[in-house]
Image: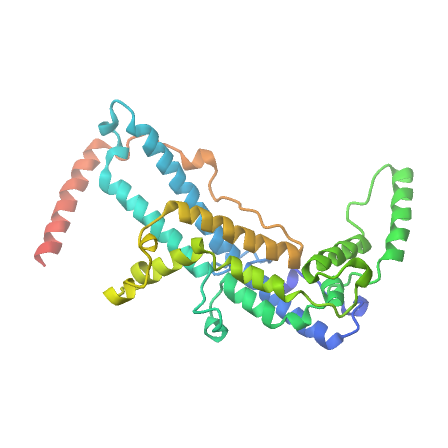
Length: 327
C-alpha cells in the first residue's frame, strides 16, 4: 500500500528528542495505517479493517432494502403474485446475509485467545491492531504523539503569534486561513493525549505514556457478549463443523442466528475503529455505501424475468437437478 504518501514526515523540523523511538514509531504508524486502510492509494485493498467493515455495511443496507420490500408486500392482497412470495429465495437471501455478517464479524475480531498474540500474525483484524499497538506503546510518548510529523511540541508561544497573524489577515483580506495553524493542531494533540494518558495539563511531560487502562478498555470492548457469541457460533456452525461435545460448550442463546446481535456488533465495531482512527490518525472514517437508496430499490416493482424465460429456467433447472441426483 502507498501509505507512505499519505503521511509526509518532516524529520529535520521534528521537535522530538528521542530520535531512535521516533524512527521506530513511524514504522509502526505506517503499519497500523495500512491495516486500518488509511491511505491515498487508489487500489482497493480488500483485507484492510475499514474495507471489511464497509463491505459488511453495504451487505447490511442491501438486505434491509430487500427485507423492507418483502415485509410491506406480505400484506398486499395479491402477495402470491409477487417474487417476494418465493420462499426459497427469501430463505437464500436471509441465510446469505447472516452468513456474510457472521463471518465478517469473526474476521474483524479474529483472535485465538487474549494471551496468544503470536498466532495473530498474518491476520488483519482489530484485535491484531490493538495487540500490536499495545505491544509497541513504549514508542507512543507524548512528544512523539504530538510532534512525530513535524508539529511543534512547545506550541503556546507559536500559537499566540499565529493568532495575531490570523486576526491581521482577517482585517486585511476579510478571510481566514484555509488551513488550521500547526500550533493549533499541536495543542489539540496535547489535549487528546491528556485523555489517553490521564495526565492533567499542568503535569505534562515529554515521556508521558498512554494509560494501560486505555488498551484494556479497547480490548474489553471486543470481548462483549454481542461479539463473542457470534464468534463462537461461527466457529462451531459456520466456519467449521463441530462435534456434539464441542457444540455442547455453547450456551443455548449462542446456538441461534440473531439479527439483533449483528446490529449490536456493528455498532461496537464501528465505535472501536473510528475511535482508533480519530485518536491516532486525526481522521474520521465515514461509511460510504456503494449504492444509494435509489439504486438499492431500482426495478423492485418490475417482474424478475420475462414469463417465457421463466419456463426455460424451470425446464433447465429440472434437468440439472435430475442429472445431479442420478450422477
